[in-house]
Image (cartoon, rainbow, N blue to C red; front, top):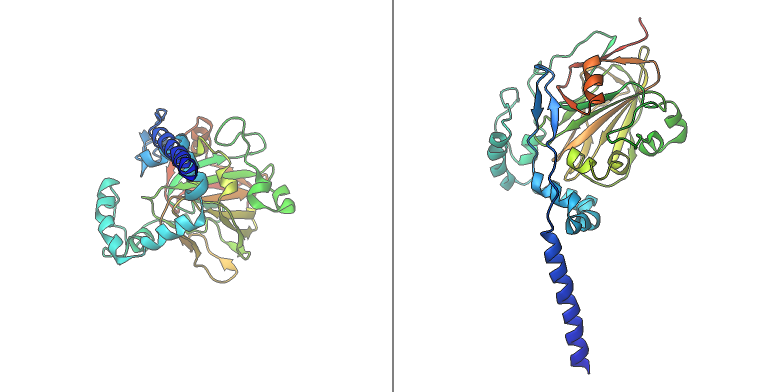
Length: 326
C-alpha cells in the first residue's frame, strides 16, 4: 500500500516537472525593438539590450514569471549577484562587456579595475561631463535615456491607461499632494551606462528617505508587462530646495541585480553637478519631480516622450529652464 502511494506521489512530481519543463520552452511573443532618439543627431536608434532573451523569458514565459515572483525580484538574489561582481574573478567580464556595448573608456579616470563593480562604478575625468552652470537651468543627473512630462495630471505614464502614482512612489500623502500636477522626469540607466548620479540643481538638501521594495527590471521590456515597477521597487529620495525651482524630489530607483544604492554626498547644501551617489551593478533609474509651474522642460524631450520614445542624455546636459526668473 505504501509503495503504491509512493509511486503515485513520484508520478505526480514527475508530471509537474514535465509540465514545468514544457512551459519553460513556451513560445515567447515577438518583442518590438527599444527605440530612442539620439539627442545629438536627432536620429532614431535601436538599443542593444543586455541579457535580452533572459528578460523576455522572465516577463513573458509562465515559468519565467514564476521565477521572477518567487526569486528574481527579491533583494537576496540581487545582493548575491552584486557580491559576485565585487569578486576579483569578475574582472574577466569587463573587456567582453566593453566590446559588446562599445563603451567609451577614454573618459574614465582609470583603466584597470579590481572587480566588475569597480569598473561599473567607475569615476569619470574632470570635465568629462560639462555642466551648464546657469542658475536658471536644470541639468540631467545621469547618463541614460530620458522621458519627460511637463504636467503629469494630464499625461498617461509609459502605457496608456496607467498614471504615475505619486502617492505610492513617495509613500507620503502630504508630500505627494505637492507634485500631483507637477512635472516628471525619468532617466533610465542601462547596465552599460555610467552609473554615478549627480545633483541637477544647487540648493539645500534634505536627509535621504529610504523606501523598501522589490528589484524588478526597469528595462522597457519589463515595463511593458509590469507598469507599476517604479512604485514597487526599492527607492531613495532627497528633496533639493532651490529659490527658482522650488522643492525638487530626486529619487534613485533600484532594479534587478542592483547590488546597492550608495549615497556619497555630505552636508546639507549641494552644488549642481556634484556627485550624489552611485548604483552598483545593474540597470536602474533616477526620477525627478518638480512642483507645478516651476520648470519648462526642453521641447525635444517632451515631443519625443509624447510620441512614445526616450531620448539619450548625458549627465550635465540641459533638460529644462526655470519658469521663475531671478
